[in-house]
Image (cartoon, rainbow, N blue to C red; front, side, top):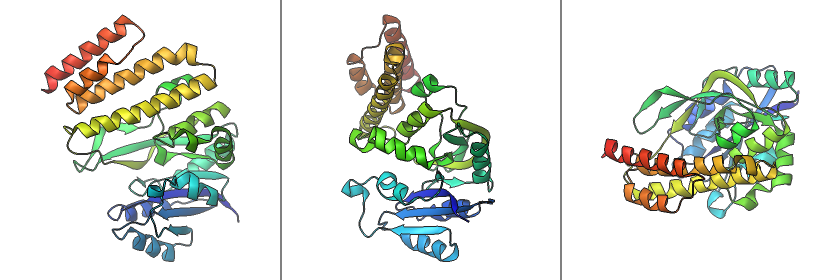
Length: 307
């Protein structure tokens, strides 16, 4: 029986989490063969030893153990190492600090995609575990329904660790978009937007895994806000690129800009960086005076309620 699904797992210094991750991968009950490609990027905490242990017990696991850290060399782990190794018709992903909880996750997604050949990808919902607080966010599930391409340009509803997509389209994405040349801060969102050009994304309204939120405990650190601004700028660049590529910039450009500025100022309030957020606001150019008024109201209200 040939491999139908290749599971991609990138890990680095995940000693405390990798067992739970690998347990979720090997427990999958399927009517087809699947492989698990695990890249350890020269961890220094013993993660590689655990990967070796699991590989010896489970033939589906293919360990890829780096002697030198590849990420620090500028190599994108998935695009540069794991994707080219994948043999399956479909690819699923789960990083070493997240984990799957549904033993039928892969079977459900493959069944859906086989029944809907027009669908380039299928994803589900996920719980959020706050590592800093040591508890689940019971009020929030990651993941929501696919509402069309325009909606995807404004909001990403896809938890990466729940996705399953066509390998053939991934190869097309790499050849067509050349993602490494863009140096985007996230490797996933651009893929979803490309896949959605080819067909509607499939969504299963059920929870199949857990995303581990390891946000820094100290939100008063100004470096956090600076990092978030860089990340949000990259998201803005991704949305701008695909909006122009699909002839939607004239229609959606103002909304994309508004979304970018709204989140940038919201992050300033979240990180208690009011002065920096105020300085950032001076550089914004929201499309209408009403938008700018809304920004100021939200900003100063946040200052009052969080001070």
